[in-house]
Amino acid sequence: MELDLINGVPAHVLLVHVVVVLVPLTALALVLCAALPPVMRRFGRALPVLALVSLIAVPLTTDAGEWLERHVGSDALVRRHAELGDGLLPWSVGLFLVSAAVWWLHRRAARRTPGAAGPAGTVGVPLRVAASVLSLVVGIGAAVQVYRIGDSGAKAAWHDAYSTTARSDRG
Image (cartoon, rainbow, N blue to C red):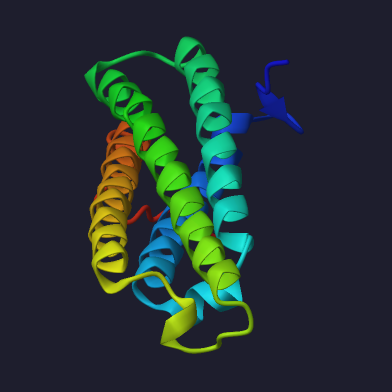
């Protein structure tokens, strides 16, 4: 099933907002959960679920973007935007995999010491540091890629669609 139009509006234009919000939000949640065990305890399963929803949104948005690309005049800016858009899927897969691993490690540590509310029920420091660094790399990479895609999309959509001077025909 292809999602091309939603109420007559290209689906890409609407779905892109889901990606622009969820991917950086997932990246931030992942970094916080990996670095701070109390945050991970509060997030629980919400972390990998959020990452999964973000992951699902990326190919839906990309597919809708490919449909839109075929229905607008293609120029270098549109092609650049499409190329950058294709590069987000690996980052979102990374967000999901690292989120699932952080959640699993936290859950495993909590099972090993049931009822422990403090450091004894957390993942060891070296493993937490490694997970935090990996989370930071994947999170920053995903957020930067979202920014690059959004910037190129805005340039493609608006580069010749407005005037730098105000129009005087307002009434």
